[in-house]
Image 1 (spheres, rainbow, N blue to C red):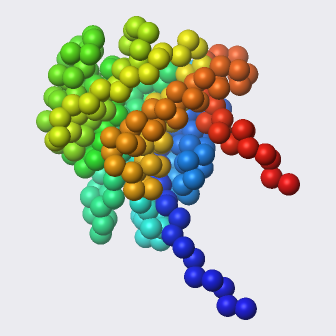
Image 2: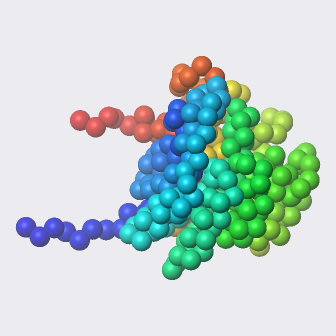
Image 3: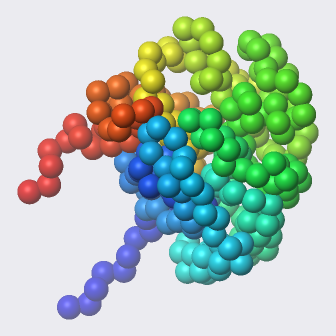
Amino acid sequence: MTEAAPGHTPIALTIAGSDSSGGAGIQADLKTFSALGVYGASVITALTAQNTRGVQGVEAVRARFVGGQLVSVLSDLDVNAVKTGMLADAEIVETVAHVLEAAPSRRPLVVDPVMVATSGDVLLRPEAVDAVRSALVPLATLITPNLAEAAVLLGCRAAEGEVEMRDQARALLKLGCRAALLKGGHGTGDQAVDVLADAAGVETFTSPRVATLHTHGTGCTLSAAITALLAQGAALPDAVRRAKAFVWQGLQAGRTLGVGGGRGPVDHLFAIRRGAPPV
């Protein structure tokens, strides 16, 4: 019997650090890709000894080997969208940027400029910020900084309120990215406000703030969900809206997940849990 010709499954690639507790980083990204029906590939930039209480240790992967992983994946898999997360140091940032820029075809790139974990632990060396700003951001289809990360990238204080968020989202575009999503999850108020700026203008996305301490991995999950949806061909504003809804439902479900003794993770698999298990 002749094997049927394969169809094309949307493929998303994450370039990020490993979270040994499974709530953030590579693990969160791959769970999110799977939950949204996308095949996930990965390039690991760092190992972390990490749990819901904090980060106990970080071992960065040699930049040359990070580049080797990336070349290996891109030379074989028809990747539809890429995201970056924790990149650890300047050499890794520059290596990733170089390989992506040299790739024969461009695909959507979502840059989540991960600098600090939910626990407050630093995940990006200070000297690497300039490399993110100058080498990686100009390649990005979308960057997804939170309020503190945007302030670092812009060299200013964190935005307070929607008006300042809109101004900073526009300012982020001047760094060279095609779009910027300024996340307000760390802000205050009953509504969580995110602001998307691109060439078409500025759009605001709001959702009721979820009263929970279990927010480990929310930033990774949002950027991974956007990447998965872009890999499936969604337009950027629609991908942002649907990804935000996905994270909101994961936060709701994560309140009773009961993982760890600290800030537990969102429930990336909430939708899968609703279905019948395989027989």
